[in-house]
Image (spheres, rainbow, N blue to C red):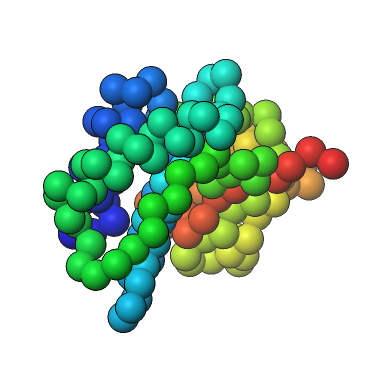
Length: 149
């Protein structure tokens, strides 16, 4: 299964437990791999939340067996420098400082660090040094919140 297919498999279970599947990383190797699930909730995430989701997903993954070979399941919160991967994430964190790496240069640059001004289904707008840049969602490599210092 691809990472997207695994995410589609896990999302309903995470949702039924009352959490958002914020992000997913799947890394496989010749001897072992890891499925890393990041969950979120408006009230925050604690260890008990991670344990609850881990137990439910372990049972599902044992039945579905989406990854060949051995792997570890890790469940955690997105953290302070969380990845922004969905339109809803960009909308929720408007006004915050973000770091965006693009796959291709926009206005002669691939990296943008500034204030997330707005977003829609196709673009986000990041203001860097007083200049607004419209960045296509489809060509974002990674986008993360920058923790407040």
